[in-house]
Amino acid sequence: MKFIFTLILCTFSISTLFSQSNKHLLIKDKETGQLLDEVRIEFKEKATGTIILAVSDASGVVSANLVKDKKYVVTTEKIGYDPVMVDITAKNDDNPVDVNIRKTAAGVMIRLENVVYEYNKANLNRSGKQQLDTLYRFLKENKKFLIELNSHTDSRGTEEYNLSLSKNRSLSCNNYLRAKGLKFNRVVMNNFGESKLVNQCADGVECSEELHQVNRRTEFVLLFPKE
Image 1 (cartoon, rainbow, N blue to C red):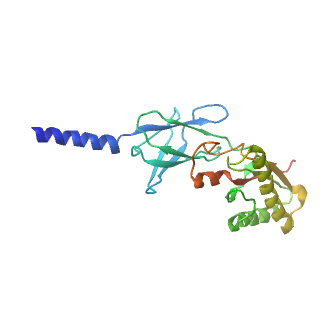
Image 2: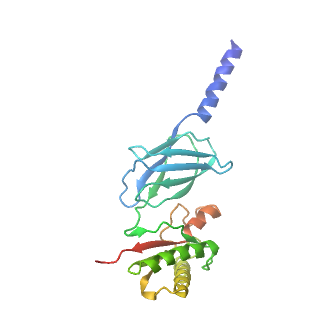
Image 3: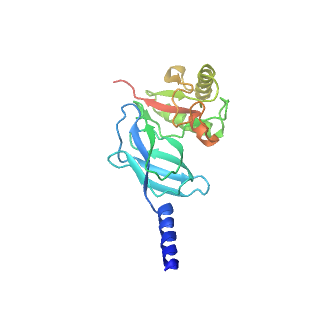
């Protein structure tokens, strides 16, 4: 009888640790606080790269079978909203982490990869130049359109320095497009510094370099010509 009792306890422990679905996230609209359903979530375990997919329910809750105390990178996806990437540690205690996502800005986001930068740098790498080459070809063929360059930094450094750094990043993109022949009056530059982070990596928050780099970006917004 003692052997059977021990076996039952062991089975219960394993089931609780690996199979129980817990509420890990609560997805909200960043501006309104509205709870959002049908947000697609990817949990990527940092140690192994294992991916688990889930979707938020009508209450904005995301439940998944995550391994307790394991670290995950969470990526959100919902039409009409900017994607967000955050780090979490699975607690399996039904106290979900709030994740706020922002509606995509007015205008149409050109579906290119953002230009990203090395820490404290504004120069373009090969990938960034490739994105701008594609953008230039589109603008060359569609001469009535304007392009908005929205440049950002991560949270490290002072607000004043980061605002200046984001300006230099916009200028790098603008100068590259101008050198290819794009007229100056077709580009609008907006510089945000660290004010529009896409994840939780604010001042004093410990984050991986991968998460910091997501914030070091220039985004493209296509501006439609007025009728």
